[in-house]
Length: 507
Image (tube, rainbow, N blue to C red):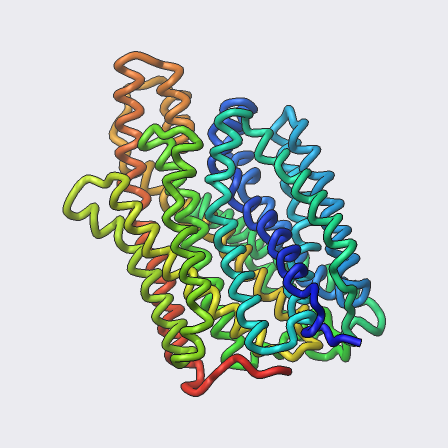
């Protein structure tokens, strides 16, 4: 009988898992280019717009811990298939949405389905690829697919939205999910973990879900309403309390939902940090740049998506090169260098802006450098994080890793996106408009574009030019803040990762 690593179908398994991950990661960003079309059709308010963008990643990140533990107990293949069922149902709801709250509900359901799918991909991958070198390559493919999917989402979305409208961004999920389920039922192995035995920790489930949602909601609200609003502080206090209780509870249990002791390993903690902090920046930048392309430069959704291509192409190249670099150089140097390159790319637009007006060539250069840095850093961090966890605890490692990806991206849109919005309002001159129009223009650059279109003529064009200029000045400082986070992750890497670490040991 073949061991999992010798099974002839393991590369087919990798293809199935990569397809699953591609769909989930694309859904994180595919709505960025469909968003203006959706806003024009459904006319959601400012709060509804934030929820449409954020609720997918928030629901997903809030449920990852529970989903990882459920896969250990119920079966990872079974959970993956159930996740695709939920994902397909949610996509149908989105396709037939006629109100903003329909889209919000569908995006939340998509997040729930995604939470069931994502931990299973890493857990099954680790079960199938027991050879250390093959596993490093498979994880590099995993990281490339995840990062590439996030960056390709706007490209695919642009192709669909331009000809078929924003509903098509969700319709794409259905045939892809059908193919993955058909192949998965045939080729994916079922696996569980001894960690999944014992009674189900309902208290821990409630604490982790409510705590993570309160954390994400508090930061989102803080970025939107500022430090004077008591609501975000109340949410953050609730999150700190619940998550502290959750961690203490998990440390006492024989079969915890989440193996938090993994964080006592420096390599694991640093790898998680090296995923989370850059994703805060990348999530915000992909969102802000896509909006700038459409509102600031007047590109169509397809043109905007195509102009993002330097990032995913560079990311995929860097991800494929990363495993060989990890075998030639110290892990801390490869990871640290990747984070520094990422920071340079993030800082480039602000630097260019000090000397000249920003145009697409500046952003193309920045996106290329960011893609190289992100591909190198996230691949090395993913391999390090998963390899640092014993096989029996891979579901915990997967849940933590993907929480870092998803929560980081959502936090970036919330915090850095809100920072850019505040700078945008501050950059606007006095507007000679009526009260509601002024409020709309100050609300967001998207609402300013719709107001300018409604006014029309020379006055409308002048208003659009003013809003676009204010938005351009607003986003580059947010990019610079993202670069600071990447530098902080690099400093942590060089300080805490052991000099001789080689994450290629079999556990």
